[in-house]
Image 1 (cartoon, rainbow, N blue to C red):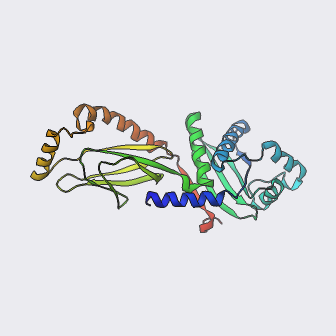
Image 2: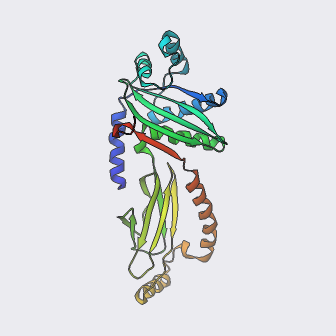
Image 3: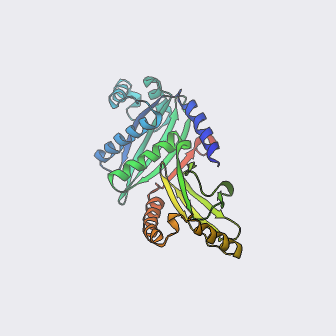
Length: 281
């Protein structure tokens, strides 16, 4: 999807969401220590507030509603009882879910329900790693649940060949050199291609991570005699970019491997079900 289209959809969705109010019910433990669930729930509350841009009803406010309404005492994530909670808290959306253990990681299942009992979306996330990584993954889960259209990142392209056509997911998006990174790209893996007549074609699957910029260094070799002459003239004129020099490539190779591993494997393995599309039973 073109970045401008993504940006337009983001603005529309944000405007529509501004009228909604949210509450976090709780995360129920499934065979793991309640203390761990409490910690994850506190992180989730903070991240949900960051997504919606406003305070959620406090845990005490939710507890007061539960104490005043015995019907909610055993409520889990059932939309029927979440409706009562939404109305009591005077909100239009409620988030609820559970947390279970899986080897050395946790599985968090979240559900978004509106004040009419409609289940709007589900998210399943596997959390693992250090505390900082857990926060990042819970944050991504919160965005997937509340504002999936805002899950975007950037790709910065450094090319040593001018006037090459940059194609992303089959669409021509720019020519080298780029004035800045390609922005507002949906998270996930994108097919990047850079090509110019007379030069080798560059093609790579590029992972885009939420709110991060993935740097891609593109190197293309001159294949035709005319292209080689053009390259010699460009170099003679002193137009050789820094990233065509051997020492830059040596330094970049190691950094690219580490970055690729970090970006490729740190993206949370999360499943999303949009109930508006008939994905929920």
